[in-house]
Length: 250
Image 1 (spheres, rainbow, N blue to C red):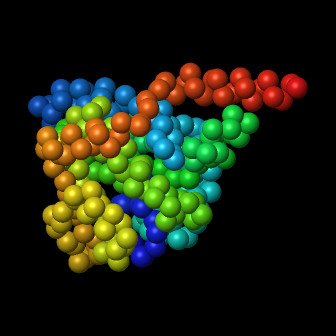
Image 2 (image 1 turned 120 degrees about the vertical axis):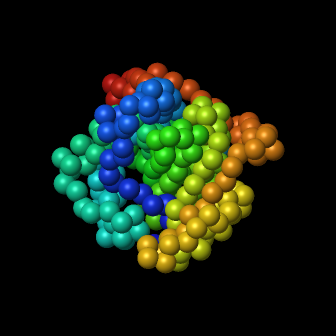
């Protein structure tokens, strides 16, 4: 990855191992994990400066626009997709047994019900399982796609929120992040979260950082995230749409 203020870590636009591909002895744990990882289908997380919502079909056109940018394609090692393929990708992520995806919204803009949710989008964040035999290990990846929102601390807040969510709701105890060796800003950010170097690949020009969540880390996270609110996404979205409709009829 190039050295830019982009909090994106190894963003893969590909499928992960599905249940039917797993050895029989792993299918039970996969089924249990599926129920957990899809827990965010109706989850809204509100922080100080950002709001995290499930990635749904309404978000696809804006996401597709982002991923048409050559810079993001290079930084995320992605190939350009057609809009139809992007919709297929969104559905596969939503149904993926081991992936939990949120869209990052600008809270200040989102606070105005007259502003459509898609106009508040600034990036995305994912937690996904990398080892079918260990449901407590997950990789974290985050992208602030809108250039005007980079370097403002949103990546730090989202990372903190997702680690807390992964620990308290998904049972994650070990996190990893794969970062391009040239992306010093992202490496420094994760190290401030007490991630340490696990390995370096000169071939892929990336470093793998990891963190194990012990009781001290858990206590600190819960204290830091006391401000984070969790609500039902659909109910909140419907309320916003009602307000927007009422304004339109005035």
